[in-house]
Amino acid sequence: MTLQFACGYDKKSETRQSMSKKILLKNDHIPGINTLEVYRKHGGYESLKKALSMAPDAIVEEVKKSGLRGRGGAGFPTGMKWSFLAKPEGVPRYLVCNADESEPGTFKDRYLMERIPHLLVEGMIVSSFALGANTSYIYIRGEYFYILRILEKAIDEAYAAGLLGKNILGSGFDHDCYVQIGAGAYICGEETALLESLEGKRGNPRLKPPFPAVKGLWDCPTVVNNVETIAAVVPIVEMGGDTYAGIGIGKSAGTKLISASGHINKPGVYEIELGVPVEEFIYSDEYCGGIRNGKELKAVVAGGSSVPILPKHLILKTAAGEPRLMSYESLGDGGFATGTMLGSGGFIVMDEDTSIVKNLYTFARFYHHESCGQCSPCREGTGWMERIIKKILDGKGTLADIDLLWDVQSKIEGKTICPLGEAAAWPVAAAIRHFRHEFEEYVTRPEGIREVRHYYRLNRLEPA
Amino acid sequence: MTATDNIKFSDETLALVQKTIRRYPPGRQKSALLPVLHLAQAEFDGWLSAPVMDYVASLLDLQPIEVYEVASFYSMFNLQPVGRCLIEVCHTSSCWLLGADDIVKHLEQKLGIKKGQTTPDGKFTLKTVECLGSCGTAPMMMIGAQFHENLTLEKVDAIVGEWEGKGERSRYC
Ligand SMILES: Cc1cc2nc3c(=O)[nH]c(=O)nc-3n(C[C@H](O)[C@H](O)[C@H](O)COP(=O)(O)O)c2cc1C
Ligand code: SF4
Ligand code: FES
Image (cartoon, rainbow over all chains, first blue to last red; front, side, top):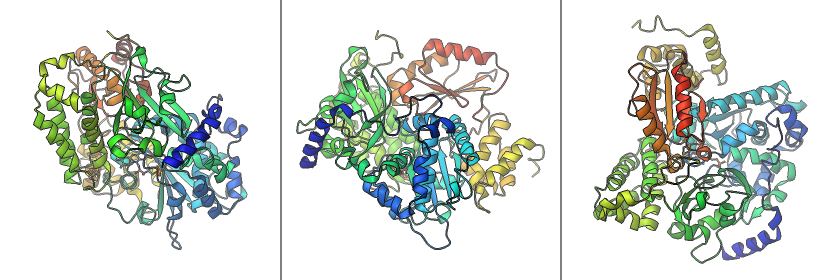
């Protein structure tokens, strides 16, 4: 770990100027890049041409070499996932793109699909060719109806140009790609719940094994990948896996889309080369541009609502005092005791006036609302945690309630069908771990709660 | 049961249903359920009544219970009537950090209802919802498929004012 950290850091200083490396969003600024014509003018679908001239397994090999890890949150190596895909004779295989994007703080897939829809469509065709899938689906959250229209338009353009359908570009490869709309359920981002939903059912996660690679959509072998993962396959095929692996830092290869929100001067979606120091990401004008209204940084949720919140001193530096970097390894340094996770790249920044307890309440309410209800520890635990936090927030809590809250969260992890249970527990654990004093303040000085300054003021208005 | 007798999609929508079913292998028409429920909600006054769900079941060759259990799982399907303009305000972390509570309070006062309620004239329903992927442009609310972002109280007033005078319904599709 330390060794990798050290060499990665050196490497970073060598490539200092090129840190804002753009691969996925390199043509983002070009007007009309959402259309097939402009997309092709700037090299679009060249990767598909190259892919169709390769052996499918050779593409899987390139993806393996690239070191690409799933961008949906779990960071599982994509090439390895692809190589697990079962290939029984005569059974169709499917590629399903996870565009459910509902993890609070995450809005990168939306940005990518809205701005450069053909990058996803090209990625779907290239990946499907590599996997031998003649049909693929993009499952998009119901609230993104307007993006469904954008994707459908891109897909129609691709069909009209012979990039989808029968015998694509004369290669003999047939492929159909469809967009499927969801209807409002965070749990449908969990891959097996997504497949259930795509089959027209409630989004109840399945027990694994069997994994989707063996028994997925309609019991057929299926690969589920995030939007950004599938889009990244396009440049990987174009530049070769080895070149891609050289970007980033250590086992965090390539670039990552980070969606930054909260009390920063420049919220938005940024493509970073993995390995950028967190401090630079927050304060540099190239990215978040520092904290709004000249306030101090208080805490960050670095990878979407499910990952542990870290106070300022631990998000900027690891417990050992090393600069914390935007990479899977560095953000994870210290485990949950002092570290966090890169997760989905949903980077939520809070200033000094923020009530950590109230922010946690919005998360707890979220998970309670989104639990599918199949497992008692999750179904009951999420509701129980929400109620305890509300009680504390209302100034009616006791010190014993804080211990109870800790106890409840500790009994969910590892006891549920899917990871939503632990995703609900981790933020609670981290908030108590790092900000217990704030919970105690709510309990011991309820009359002082009014003094706990909440940031309720609207966007663009000066603090009162 | 003849409850579905007077409920029927337009020919145009029926063609869309058929097109949707063709996306899946033969016999897998159940997969069309979510898209078709969206169409039903848009065509039949913004909510899914039992007769409407029965109609969808008959169209897709499903048992009514298969439709009910799905409709009740997903938060975008309304099982009660809603106002002509359904306002959905995000109240999760990033939006809360930038004033979502003030937006909700303001709308409650302006419309004279609490969240979850519909105005007596049936014009507005106010709902709070979880993160809609608009955190970088918080606070935000959604009306139909339209995102309204970087909200201020003035912006909210202008949007509500616009809907006051509108004859049509907000819809997702
Ligand atoms: C509760 C829950 C919600 C999830 N939501 C999403 C999501 O919105 N988008 C996504 O890509 N992955 C989501 N995931 C992760 C998926 O289960 C899956 O790991 C991912 O789609 C795999 O793609 P990747 O390897 O390309 O990241 C979620 C997981 C859980 C447990
Ligand atoms: S952990 Fe929660 S969301 Fe996941 S299957 Fe169990 S009850 Fe459902
Ligand atoms: S928190 Fe409101 S849109 Fe994400």
